Image 1 (tube, rainbow, N blue to C red):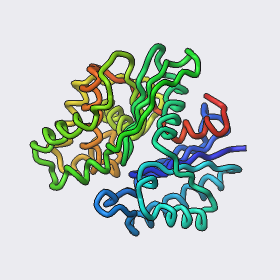
Image 2 (spheres, rainbow, N blue to C red):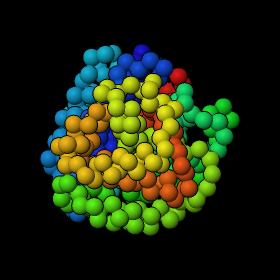
Image 3 (spheres, rainbow, N blue to C red):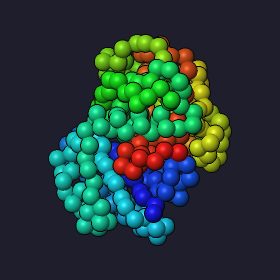
Length: 303
């Protein structure tokens, strides 16, 4: 019986439907900007909630049409922070028939780690898994694939691509000074992250976008992204490119989902700040993300 795992994030809603993660029946992403304006008001805006509920309803309906017999759904940074999160979750349950569990940052980090180490490209040896979301970034230290269920320290920082975009990108295109401002702010925000060795693994939409743009791939192909290595120079190249381009021009780049064009500048800047803080010259990409970790945690069958 196919089962569906859903991640209701600050910038997007994602669903994976599978009998086994080796061969998903569906793996969908809808960019909705649920956390849009949250930093200013402390509340989810009605247009953002409406967009997200529409997308969620469409994804759930598609999964049910493909035979989904069970659902697990979690909410992350936007729903942790919003004063009206309960209202959104109640509306989602009434409309879609699913219950959204709002999880703490540490649990979000745990699920991200499960996802990253389950992929075919997961490295051996010590690693740091980084998941850049719309409203927060999760960090998880641990051992690589095949070395036991060893997860070390994990924590979440309120540093995400949607939140940072709203704070720093107030013109289109962004002025060059924005890069320096983001670098300074992100370096300070990353103070809890100690420099160190070990493989750096990036998961989630920002890292996947960096990978597909580096490949120049017009279509998403997880087999090409899984285990792909990006140099710091490549991340710097893309960051400079996004700063020069208007959002509409970014949206036309091969490999970049048009819906991610508004937030990719901030996402790339966060990725680069993490690499600098860790002293990493390269990072490895995982094609999996939190929804895959949720699926594994709930039903326990790895690819």
